[in-house]
Image 1 (cartoon, one colour):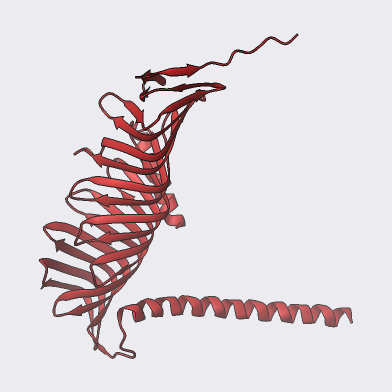
Image 2 (cartoon, rainbow over the protein chains, first blue to last red):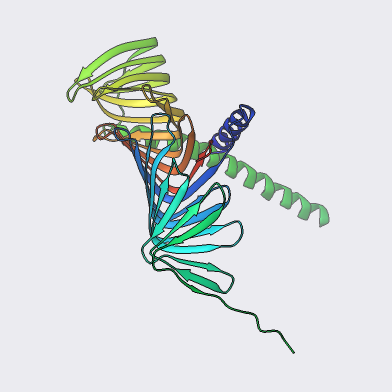
Length: 149
Length: 188
């Protein structure tokens, strides 16, 4: 166990020295990978720690391309996203688009920031700019602070 | 009185240390023995031969071809082989693997790899994929599923750890569970 940890740290250091930065960390109860289809499924308490956001869900399915980089990624079941500015998004499904670097949240998506909330048909999170866009049937509730006398 | 009391304390401490050392020694001895017993149900098998720099090619049903190299091999009377510093070159369903480790006990019947228990720096390399599964200890079950503890699965861009892993050679799947953690070394 200790040897494996040391090996992992050494691998990290080696990869860091080759300008490969550690970008994503995924934790879960279980992961299954299929060699033929280059697909994988994480299940149970799934948590994805990306650069500017943390995503939790019940299940995460994905496929890798020939370079072993993410091709498709779908999170399902009680999806929760919180970004570095404290914006929270809830939904039932989130799909990551690798080429556009976006995550589209569907299934009664809801966005919260402080006391303000927003619901829409889908909410798109742009990872590059760390911003959100709400699309279709948007309803917003904004709380105004009443000045104290 | 004080002298007697400290002498007694020393004697008790000395006995505790001796008992602890014996317990550690026997637990290590029994853990290896248990692994061997998991592979072989026949007790007290006799040694048939002992070979240095062992190398042999095997083939069996289900399109399984394999070659085994080892620095030291002991052959027992019950189809069980014990190997030190071993490498197995496996081909299962047109995929090539290299399984290696410090110590292994194998049951081989008619060229078929029935069971395998491996210990110490066990690794499974998927030669066509550049994937490496590293473990402390592994056990190959009859259904060609390699069960391992403390596994690190490394690919070109990813590293995944799990306390337990199950590598199915027939279905070409790998499952890791218990405290699973994946780290990606590139921008997603």
